[in-house]
Image (tube, rainbow, N blue to C red; front, side, top):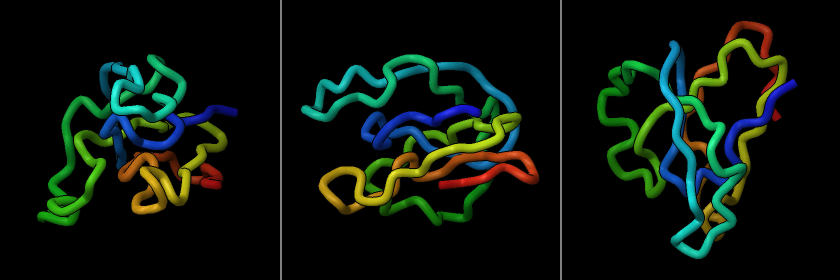
Amino acid sequence: MGRVSGDGSDGSDGSDGSGGSDGSDGSDGSDGGDGGDTQYLGEEPDYGGWFDDANNYEQTVDATGQDQVTVDVGARSGLAFGPAAVAVSPGTTVV
């Protein structure tokens, strides 16, 4: 079982594929999630502008291959999902 970055305050997000790694330092006053093991897609999907107004979307979190991922509701003072976009494999439980 795996866990995707805490509250999405690092601007992370997700949909599907493979990618590199990054992590939040929490410098905006947030907790910074789990600080370094967040994986991102190597190539971002075309969301057709869906995330243009999202306050925390920068990249898609790659959670493919995990049995379970957590998307926080109420991230960023209750105004966002964290992460905003996350890629998962078929059969993955999202909580």
